[in-house]
Length: 165
Image (tube, rainbow, N blue to C red; front, side, top):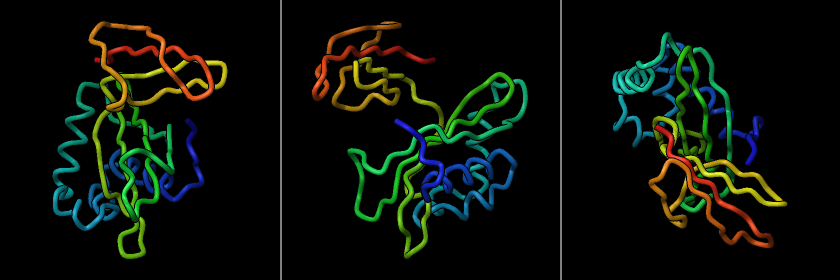
């Protein structure tokens, strides 16, 4: 999976993350859909962001668009795209994941998830190397690392899942 840095959802996700990093919580709030604005007032965005990054040795310093998708299993009508933005500072790496949708003709964050995923997934094959979230179609393994064969369209692949904590 790649990051489309020119996509509307990629640009909006990075803007949202940068507003958080630089303490512009009202600006981050303005990028949310009307429903999400009710759920996440600017003060709650600030609180959640600072709590997510407080274990580091300093403030967040950079945002990097890591993955974007135009299609995904839970896509809804009106959705433009899905984006994962890493947020890093001294001693930590976290992330925000957003779904950007059309809100009355304006792209806005419709869905927001805080933090990096608890699980990392890598599929090794002759055709692909994929890193991303586990989904409901893949069994979770509670060991530190597991390797198992899996079916991948058109190729034989191995699944490696590791618990991140």
